[in-house]
Length: 585
Image (tube, rainbow, N blue to C red; front, side, top):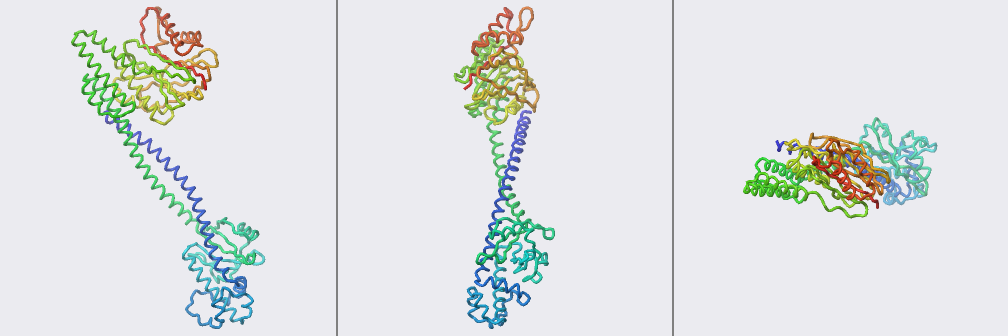
């Protein structure tokens, strides 16, 4: 049964960690997607710039490029645009120095050639450029690479060259490429219009639908003597861009997911080894000791727990309690006095229990704190605690275990230790900490004990207290120098009754001079000879008579009032109080 419960805790913890890791992976994926999109678009802009600049540089390397552009578009029907350079015989008509130094030939020098020679020279330069463009296209692989020259009316443009990856899908562009007129209304293309108006290249892209396919276009002007002669366009498939981004995100996410899975496995292993297994060992040892009363076996079992945290200290305390009880049991047996033996055991347990409750009260300028516990028998089920979470947060605890005697005292020790360990080790809202404590106390609770609890964490610098009330008495609060009053706010079921309970958190904001007074039901349920209860009314009346007293004196005043009210009637229940007066910064 215990193994099944430990496995259940492990599974619950694994589910929580898995949900957190999935959220982390999803959040990280979105961040990578958006940053990857920006990065890839920057790379796309750089690729467009490099490609168009390279092509523009090849064209502008011809000193006569302006003359060549005019000639190509005016005589496009006469120019052989094939890339086949096997037959170069016809170019011998052109003077050899023109072909050798073709990039430095000036328009004036070309005008001195015969018309047939001019045609062959222009054709040779065009075919050479096209061959170079094919090579660039193969290396850099844009989807489309072309050059157009707007006509005077800027509503049409003429192609200088065009190159596409899949020409079958773009046959409307490539029929008679050189000189083909294309309807291009620049006024409907803001990026192109801005480029021609400003004379400057733009890093902006245009998205255009071409046969149900989205294409991204980038442009660069080719200028000679400050005048734009034409513009070069590099186009890319948007689906290819998105695919590259998605592939990048998926690759990184897979690596991140594997890393998180490994980290989660390590975390689960550490959680099991450092917390769940030692705690289960303590609980099983306590049950075994309760059954067998054999301190040697429980000490041997608990010595295997090497934890240096609260669980390790709990194991030491339980071992000490078991050994001490055994020692006094043997002593009582030797004396053959059952009554003396029981009294001795209970006295020792009371001493141990008293030693577990903190007695070193903080001496700080921000607040004054005091707490006390007076059991109805030698040992009791009431407890209080306070401890620092960090430099600016202090935990305040008061609780009441059902039942009396040793069983209640042992359960009180377990509840106090588990609560402190969870509060210090779990970085989560206070209501979730209480839920974890409740689930752990439910495990192995064969005696069906339960505990009422008021647990708060105060921010010292502000006086704000976030708290959970699990079936405990409502606190008394004094604000702004006025009278004390009972604050009836949130209230939940006690701990260790049912697992998976959901708790709600409340909030109290203390100002300088405000006081909060916490207590167990032994205070308000004290009775007198007439069977009358001291009640909340008696408590509030006593608090208001001594409202300006320090916490220690205020608790003493309440005890005096209880003694006067009860008279000779024996104390029926444990009386525990915790009082804090906030003094501010």
